Image 1 (cartoon, each protein chain N blue to C red):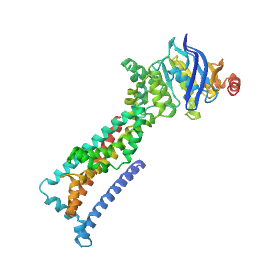
Image 2 (cartoon, each protein chain N blue to C red):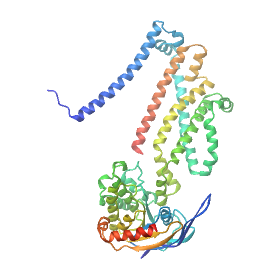
Image 3 (cartoon, rainbow over the protein chains, first blue to last red):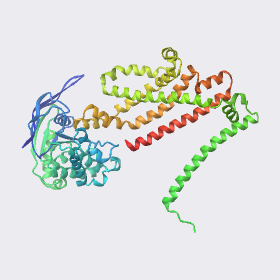
Image 4 (tube, rainbow over the protein chains, first blue to last red):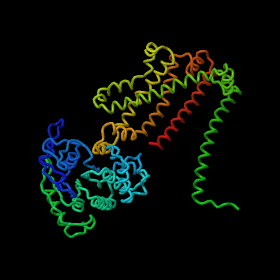
Length: 249
Length: 264
């Protein structure tokens, strides 16, 4: 089933120096349960694409549909995960995870219990009452993911969620996030500039051109398994070659 | 048999000892200061008519009509606390408004900068004419001195909130009011506390300045009156009481800080 559809999406910014055409034309269809990575040269408007899907920005042309419904403003359809975990330092992990439910006024006992269950399921049960600063970077990012999953969004948007972590942690968190998203059968759109990260996580990779962005190519990655296993697969480096050449051309 | 202390116990003990050491030196300085002052006065090294002395201060306080000093202290404390609360609450509210309405913020910016630079005491005569020469004028002076700094520092704290956190809340569909209540305000709690600390000092400045300008009672009045009639014992006694009051109020804010840290 098609869950997300971008139909001729364009975006033009107005700045004092004039108009900047950031995105020329993006057509994209994402199936339920798919993990799609968007990569492209820096400054090509990858994050802008996510902002538009989240309803934070209005496209200047074209339309975006989530489950056939046109995106017009923010709501509870998408869960946005940012570069840094953005946990609120003054809230406990448990209360951080409830943020989305509170904001959307859906903090019913069942929904709260679901969120707590998620914490317990993914190894944060003992840290419910801890403050974010008492957790490691990897655990914080896991808590941030559970915060976005707690209000059961239809689509997860990941904006370079690992880029603020050191290499060791990044590999581990990457595995974590992947297995959580798979276990919860969520649809995810990842934006990254790290090609190997994209190959190790995604089912499909969308390569954007430099500004003004269009979809250059879409690759279906035929490697299965967890990110670490994928990295060891012999096909990994050939995929890397193909995509690296495409991005840097 | 002597108990053998573990390393951690030894550490705790040295921390405790260090605390005691600092505290006793602090006390010793205070005692030494007053003893030397008294001694110098007794031995006529200094002219105690000009410099007063601890014993003369005590005598002054004792010789005042019963409870007279408490009346003056009470009035000053009331003016100070009322001014402090009005300035802190009103200043924070104004900061919230300026955060909420970006255009208003841009419009008001030059005015706030000018008002901040203006020495508020210059408004003294106007205040007296507008609200009369009573405690109202003194409270107004206190509020004027504190409020601009409050607005500026609180607004700066609101605006320094991480854009990523705001984006996160917006992506969840949060309203502006929810962003204010759940993010902007709790995020600014440390700044609000330091604003209160600054206001403790500033509100005392405001009250005493106000009382210098216009008053019939209060510690500032006693100081000015004492100076005019050359009763320097009275000036010193009032100053000493002011020191104590300021310290007590600061401790009050420190308590609020502890409380806020626990219940944010």
